[in-house]
Image (cartoon, rainbow, N blue to C red):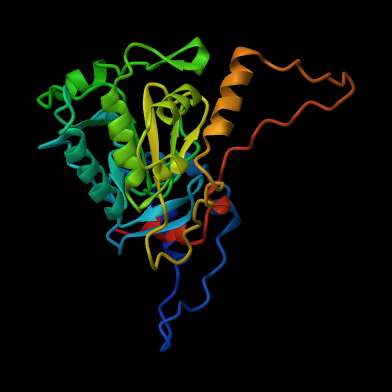
Amino acid sequence: MIRTVLSLTLITALAACSPGPRDISGERMATPKLDPVIASKSAKQLFGYTDGASRQAAQPHGSYAKGCLAGGVQLPETGPTWQAMRLSRNRNWGHPELIDYVQDLSRKAAQQPGWSGLYVGDMSQPRGGPMLTGHASHQIGLDADIWMLPADDLNLSANAREKISSISTRRSSGAYVNNNWTRAHHEILKAAASDPRVARIFVFPGAKVQMCNDEKGDRSWLRKIRPWYGHHYHFHVRLSCPKGAAGCVDQAAPPPGDGCADAQDWVNNILNPPPPKPVDPNAPKPKPKRELTLGDLPGQCAAVLAAN
C-alpha cells in the first residue's frame, strides 16, 4: 500500500500515464506522455515512502542507478541461515533472483567456522527506485550489501538489529586487511563471486589484493571482485539482469584477467599518493548533482508506482 505521500490525485495521474494495453502482437501500445508536473516530482520521495511491492510480474526497469522494480519480493526478516538488518529502513526487497541468491549464499556462509549464515544489509526498497538516504544504486532489485560481521546469532530482535553494527576489515585506509579479516571472508566472497548470476562484487582494494595473494586454486572468480571506495564493513553484490528482462540495463563485463594488478596499483596509490593535480583558480565550480525526478526514470516506473 502506498503511503499518503502519494495523494489520490497523484496516483490517478500516474495511472493515466501507465503503459497501455498490449496489441494483438503482444507489444505494448503507445504510452501516454508523463505530465510535466508529475515528471518533476522527487523520485526518492515517491519511492522512499512506498510501503509494499506492486502486484506485477517481477521486472527490473532501467539501470542499477536509475530505475525501479516491479513485482518485488521481500526477503523474510529471519531465515535458517540469515537475518535482514536495519528493518526500519524497509530495504529487504529485491527481484526474485536476488532473494534466491542471498538465501543460497547464506547457506554456503553457514558452512564456515564461526558463521551461522549472513547478516544482510540494504537490498532495495519495495518498488526499487532512488532511496531517501545512502546508495545511488540498489534501484532495480539486483544489489545487496552483505555484512562483514560473522552472523553467529540468528535470533537477534528487531531492536537489536537497529543497534548492532558490522565490523571494519580494513587498515591503512584500505591498503590492507586488519585482524578482523579471516579465511572465512575469503571463502564467502569466493562463493559469492562464483555464482553465474553475479555481475560484480565491490570490496575495498586491500581485501582484493589479500584474496589475490591467498588464492592458490582457481582464480577465475577474482575477475568479478572489483576494488571500490569504502566497502570494508560490507561487500556489495550486484547481479546481472535476469534472462528475458527487457529494459534492464546490464552491468558492463569486467575487464579481462583477474584484476589483481589493478587492485595492487590502487593499493600503491593509497600508500604513496600521486601528487595532486594543479587546480585552475578560474575554473567554474562544478554544479551540484541534481536530484533524480520521476521523469528521469524509465517510463514504466510511473506504472510501477501506480500499480496496486
